[in-house]
Amino acid sequence: MLHTIVHFCIGIFLALTLSCTKTNPIFCLDNQDCLDPQRPICDLTGASPESLQLSNTCVSALPSSAASKPSVSSSPPSQEQPITEQPSISEETSCSTSSQCVMSQTPICHDASCAACTNFDQSDVLCREKNITYPFCHDSGTCVNCINDHYCNNDNTPICDQQTLQCRGCIPNGQALSLECINKDNFAPFCHYDGFCVACGTHQQCSSKVCNNHQCLPKSKIIYIAPNGRNSIDCGSFTTPCLSITDAHGGMTKITPSRSTIYLNNGDYIENILLSETTLSIIGVAASLRSNDRNTPVIDIKENVHVTIEGITIQNAQGDSYPSGILCQSNDSSTMHLNDSVITNNDGFGVQSIGCHIALQHSVIQNNGSGGLSLQDSNFVIQNNMIINNHNPSILFSFGVSIQNNAIQNIQQFSFNTIADNRPMNDITNQEMICVTESPLIINNSIIWNHNTRPNTTLVSGNCGWSHSVIQGGYSGTDIIDQDPMFIDSTNNNYHIAVSSPCIDTATNTAIIFRDIDGDLRPQGLGYDIGADEFTQ
Image 1 (cartoon, rainbow, N blue to C red):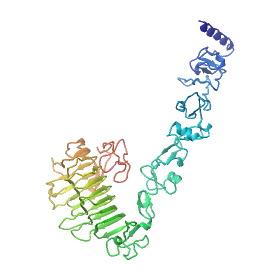
Image 2 (cartoon, helix red, strand yellow):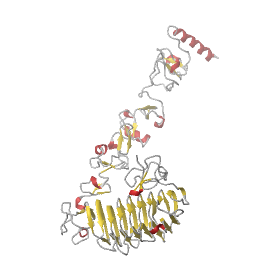
Image 3 (tube, helix red, strand yellow):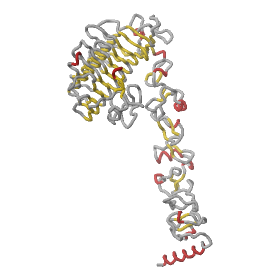
Image 4 (cartoon, helix red, strand yellow):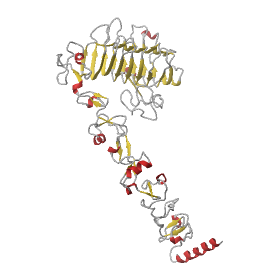
């Protein structure tokens, strides 16, 4: 009762005091209720001496040590109402730990008050103790993730964004130099499509012509071959290339443990390569390997070989025995990585593996007689490839892809491939893909289609599972689409998908493949696209 009487009397006193100004309410809920320009702030806790310890009273100012929170207006003030200043960032809020200091400009608790991190000598230590994600003290007094690029030491997030002061990935710029990567590190001037700065992302970005693991390989570690070269004891340097790979004094004779990369300069090379008990890489950009011997694969891989083939067109293995473009045959001892290549116009399979470990990516296998790809008792990773138009009018049985794994294999991955228009003689036994495996295999995100098939023909057979794929005629599996994939111009071998394709945004959302067969980023839209091609505008 006494408190009510006192409060009433004080209210009368304040009302008389303010009688010469605009009416000022005795009580307030927020600053908008305080209409007197001389008393524009609502003291919610009674901390100001002017309020006489009464809460919700209009006052001229709050003391710097006040713990009252600023009032929040439900609507913007009118022109007649004064726009009151919120407490400045130097005004501290009471706290017991830094976790209670939620304002970014006063993140550190010291002596029971929140303060700017710049107030302390060991500012970075205090920021790090508060949150390891924001371990540095910025000049603004805020704890931040980074201040400049030198604070960003994670390869995947090398750039400090000056707007957010957060480390992020660089912005890819195609083949061009990246200014932000150059500013970060002159020795890593290109932005990789995964967002990190690299010395090189493609072979063309290196003066040595070979990029290996995002580093330009020194010329001294490369054996150079050129159509205008000359085979000799000392050939193979950048300035004095050899003429061939396999002939006497050719490139193969120069291979050592520290010099095992062969670079083919642009041109056409007519020779067959037999590999056994060796480790090497064969790299090109616009180079072609043609068979010189009938009934012999262009590249024949035997036991204990570890080879990478990249950027090469492999063609014209011919003969009555139907030789393949590439044949890898071993007792589980050889590996082959085939990237960014074209395998075409071979009488047998484009690529045939028996007992090897195969990685086939970003390549085109087309116009081969027995079929595109044959895998038998092999470990494999097959991603982002087009296997198209493989057929021979004189062969009764031919396929786009044949997988026959009669023994348990540790690695079997087949995804984001386009398999289309592969057909045998008279389409009698037309199957795009045969898949029989002892180990479980789910084929996903792939296109199986044939514009020349007979009605009611089954294009897929075997015991493999299927997921998120376009299969003509349908098939049992998860999210199988039986609709024309809408290739742009399959008649002229353009198997990229059109804007109306049902493949767009319908692949698995958990995919971890970031580029398509052309090097375009995945995904481009709301989701990944089925097949080897990611649609781009």
